[in-house]
Length: 310
Image (cartoon, rainbow, N blue to C red; front, side, top):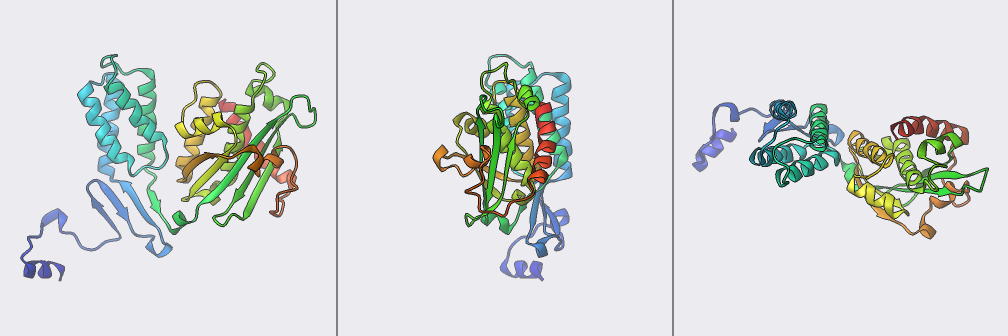
């Protein structure tokens, strides 16, 4: 019927593999659009298996040869950039930056450790092939406030983590408050380092993300932090030292796994609702408290791999 209509209008219609019947899944320019969950208000966009295979093979060849000429780097970056549009998370964008840096550097064609690392990350993300999901939840952002306190002279609460989750209407949904043990502080570098507030702020952010990952899935989320260094690292996706670089890598991994569009902003300490929970004070938290023991067990479970990564 549609073809007859086009012919009446005098339009030429492509035949063959492009002339396909209506379907829940279809491909266009290397992208697969999945409408099978339309009834659940979801549309999925992903790279086609063919594009994934071709790009994966090219990256593998570069890693094996350890050579990437400037023109080849620019060509690879263009292909990666298109595929990146169907990938979740910001780690893939950092990979594009690494390829661009290599293309315009004065170090020749040799693939260094940094570029090799990011190419492997991109290849892994490509193979995982998690589709971008468009849902009505995109119009309902969540807000996460996190904070950390560090008072080494306070033997009862040396270093605390706190977080509060708010919905799109500004209503408190959940909160947590946790005190790091001496063993956990030692893993962060204290007392070898005089302060670990940066690391603690990153941990608070990660704990909140993991605790509420299901609520943040397929949504935009604004994370409010009152520490400039932690905010800047979260935005850039890079840290110069350990364990910061490992912690920010976990952050990027969480964004990718939960398909969360993250925005990081600074909030003045006096306006940070998570300040109280980080200091063992829940007086301004209106949400019905969850069992403190249950939250502590959950936080401990979350911290173990994070601290191990650091």
